[in-house]
Image (cartoon, protein in one colour):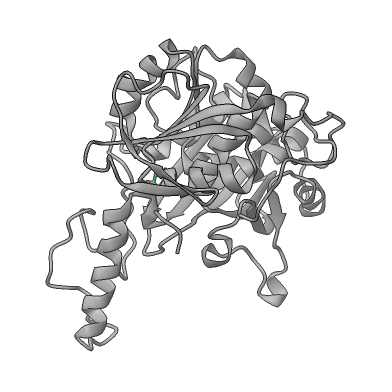
Length: 381
Ligand code: 2RA
């Protein structure tokens, strides 16, 4: 299994030889582009990764390599605890350095994935040193001066950055990969959604907690109906193995969690749709990797399953897996490790006058974090 970590901590894709869709994003892999590709050798960048030892950091290194990002030098930054350890990039060992305010001299692009506090404290130093920061934490997402970008949706927003570009929350990014093309075609007004989120979205300790609890149950030869363990959970407020916990991030006075409100708040900013409304329940489930989201969306213009299928089958970065009669629909286990998100279970929503229900799955370490960040960096080339 690939390395794993929290937010606030693919197949190989060389630079495309053919044209791509977005004038603003030279490496964009959409089907309709006419934009010529840059010469990667003329755009070599000094790149830094802050939080290189985390799961998202590990995926960032992998994405840079697999997508042949034009890296001149790669600087890996982490806490003092990890300084001196080595990680591989393109077959070479790179020694991890301790993150300090002076770490960014000569850096062109700094990918941050080490938590909101680190972003708050160190991103300004990176910007001052002349780097553009792509930040995976939630810290700058609602800052009006910071674009919040999913390149398939709003690559053009990258241009308005003032040194920092924010990467959206994983559940939002994955949901919008299917919702935004539908919005373009039919005009979404509001959604109701439930997420089924993998433990790797919380981080390495959460992965251990699920693995340990599963082992504990199996080693005790328990019956299926005696799944409640004696040992106390550490990461989650309740046992995660064999359970579903409707509690992701902290609760707000409204009764929703912060994670749940990210869908509406970030969705509005990314889609440039101030009236978008989202009522979401986020649930942590005992899956290691990939988030799944069940969405019911209401639209302004008449929608049909056939028209939606037509739209979604052309959407960049999204696969249609929708043949329920043959048991074909997106599954977390199948999508883990893949760049593309997948959508299926398309049906007219029986409780709405003009609504569609669907199921979208994405690898939250990739499209929900590292891949999206590297795609944003590609927009800077
Ligand atoms: C999660 N929001 O809890 C995080 C990952 N970005 O899954």
